[in-house]
Length: 173
Image 1 (tube, rainbow, N blue to C red):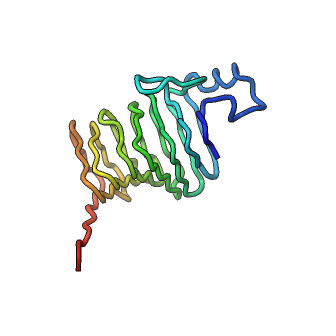
Image 2: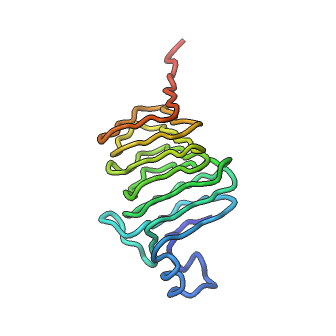
Image 3: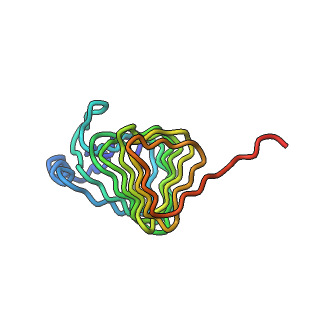
């Protein structure tokens, strides 16, 4: 359960801070059963957040089980989600800007993403939009699809090589 800055050595008390800084200096692989928490996950320092210690340019998350992260993913780095069967729910508005690649499994955005974010959905990936949002671009190569439960604007374009499902809500009865 992460409730503080993920890049902080406080989360890994048995590890040396210098080693953690080095490990997060370029790219990082995170393989876990469940991801949960409410802290800040730093993907390179950005204008909106300064990482306390260590930052990754690209983080590849392999999450084995359905997970909910109630914190902020911030900075200028890229997030790659893998793990074919798992669903990662991001409950807050996210500010990271280096790109979101969904290689496998599902990313469910309950909040908004950064307006300059490029989103790529791989052949085994699914992206769900649950709150009206604006991003830079979406490339959908997914066999599973992009599910729109709310409006999504892609200012630089939406390339659909997969399946897009627009979910309608019935109002009243």
